Image 1 (tube, rainbow, N blue to C red):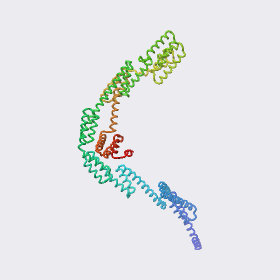
Image 2: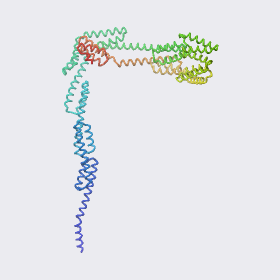
Image 3: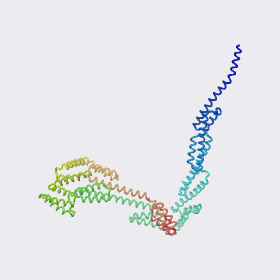
Length: 619
């Protein structure tokens, strides 16, 4: 019985086992395909579309009816088609020469794919390489063009540098090799010319001649060599005459120096230097002359300073004596010599105000109306005294017809009107009050005070005028500087300190110290005069320094002598019929000073002698 049961179990196991094995295998396949799908999605997200398709294709081999995988493959293939199309567009753009457009297209493909996508990346790399070659070609062209420009300008070292740099972009280019050879040749010629010209200017004519002949061996068509060789022949042939000419320049310079005709002497000594004759002696003479000129100018400046100080002192003296016209005349003389002198300007302002006040009160004796005005005043006062106010008004009005701003006449007119026409008198006083207020607004407080006092002489009870005058007097008391004994002592100490600074030529410091002294004691005349002296001297020194610097900057001695050398050589060549040689010398001057008109005229004359069409050549 037991054997039968065992047999039945064995039979059942035999029948069930194959089904069990099949179920287990199916479960493993499903798990594996799910992994392939997820791995494909990861690759897709990394833009490796080819890799994703490969994995998903494996899934379809196991599960041909998997719709999800079919959709994923379709999407990946669409991306591949899009990128392939973009690649084609990039190469089309390259064919049309649109490098930037092609670059942007290839960049889009690169950013939307991965290097593992060989079918995309190989042509993509070719595209980028092609772009780089085209760009290098353009860089090469631009660098060579810039090198050619420098080459034409004679900047051979700079041109060489660019040609060598351009060779990096086309190492085997024949164009660059040709350019390098040309530059080397011209650079050699350039160096030889520099040496030949230097030797010529030093008077070493035989050595210079050898260099120019060497240049002709390299370039038989060189334009400068024949001209310089002709100059050398002339110098050697005319050496004795040129030496005599140079000697005469030097000797004339000595004569003019002894006569104290300094500028003319400098000109002759510079001519001698330009012709390489007694150069060191000529330079010493020029140095001595310049020192003497500087000494004379210094004395002139000091004399000017003293003159300005004298006129200021005279102006202050007459001002304190109330002789304002004399004061103004002296101050104006000082101002002519030093228009920026602050002390003179301040006293001119004071004197002008004082004169104005006088003229407001009195008609000057020198005026053609003086006698008439005095008679009218007398008649006006007499009429007022006998209480004939209407007649008095007529006389004062006649004065105002001639001098509308005469305060004395206005005052007496108002007094008379107050007796005949009080309303009109009140209007006049109101107008005078408004004028006083306007003067205060313009910071003319002294003039306003005078006007207010006139109002109160007519009407002592005019409240507005009295209160305004009281306010002005209060402000003036506050503003007025009270000079204490301590102020005077300190001012005197500062004055002494300024004198020491002035003696040591510390002018700026002296000005500061004396300015402070005047602030402490405005009536300290000596401090003002010395302050004026220091200001004038300082300005003269600054003007002299500026003028000297400008002259030196414009044309220093060496440059001026160089110009003279070319000018004199040009004259000598011209006088001996060597017109091309003369032109070459004068053209050297125009390189230094393009506005030298005499040289331009000389060049035109020489060209005419050579038969050139001058108008055409100048245009």
